[in-house]
Image (cartoon, rainbow, N blue to C red; front, side, top):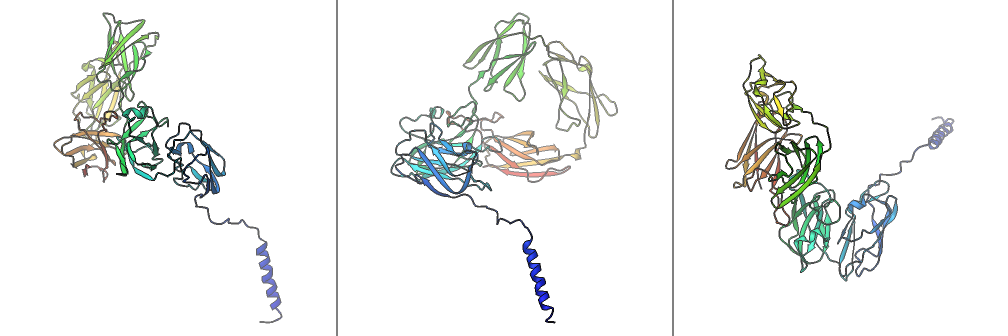
Length: 529
């Protein structure tokens, strides 16, 4: 290389280096922070004994925030007055806990913050952070754990409170209605729970879906679960609990007038044996009532009475008398309709629903014709506001249903307008078949429900001696099964009773492993535990 050009090459490289250094750029800031905050100190210290302070401060290695602390914080034993927790909504390097209660002597307290402590920037969670102290000379260290599940629903809601009541000379089963427990824990956002820092003793174990978060059982709004026997600590450490909503004592809510001749009556409990009488009825008084679909209320239609109606309700030991003043002049309009859709499947029954109970059906004014305009024979079953029309249907056919005026006469004497409906049927090969074989629990009658992909019950079958259930003519879909162990053979699911120490009838869910396809048979074995 010519030595004369070497200085120019060096000068060029130097200039290029200066240009690159002069370019403006954004610093990367280093890797993303994925570390949870760390407690560095507490005053008084964590696991302090002979605790006597009224305020606690817990310090961390970085700025933190409290996220949903009112939902997440579990204090055990529960306090009568909620402590003042700061800061709420702002970042800080410490948590302040101001106690408003007089603490119990010789008791270990734990403040479980659950998932509420997060760092300020990345929201990294300090999982299940706890602060523990004792008002006595020792820290209790025993613990129990387990799971909780809903007695009927497939999915168990989060945030179930688990409670321990000390069994001593003052204990009674009714304690859960009026006193807070000695110890408490929570499932937080899962179904798993743990209660720690427990002293040795005998306890009653209860789970509560505690709507008002007051650690006391309110049957009208709360679900409950319980372990039948008292538990000894130390002893068994794992317990699985089942939640259920109790069926409370029957009671009537005050009736209200919906329209002329139509009242609605709310209730709690099961009205299956309810007797409704009217104390001021006239000789021409008539009434009919039925349950409002999807609600705990009854629709009551009446005629032959004017200014007021005096109801007498009786079911078992329950008796109540209520007067309802009648003011409205608005009259219900009769509406008759079908919810079957446009296709009648082999398992379907054509159902007419009415807004007012039907007192008479004139079958001569109901006409059913197939696609060739041939009249089809049928039969009718009437049950208040539900009219079932049964007729033989052929594959790949079309049916025209016409209800002429006067086909349906309601309770008040009004009749329907003309109703025209069109339905089609599919071929047999458009449907599949599901064969369910069941093993285990041979002596218990079973209710087997087929649920479609939207979790809607589409078929129900009963399995007694035979442990096989065939669901024929099933629409192609992905299905699951709900199996109810019908121990009292009353063909329905029965809930539990806390005071009766009776858990609900067991319910199990199973996925059907393969989708049901058209013209296909799916075999599904299930085993009951």
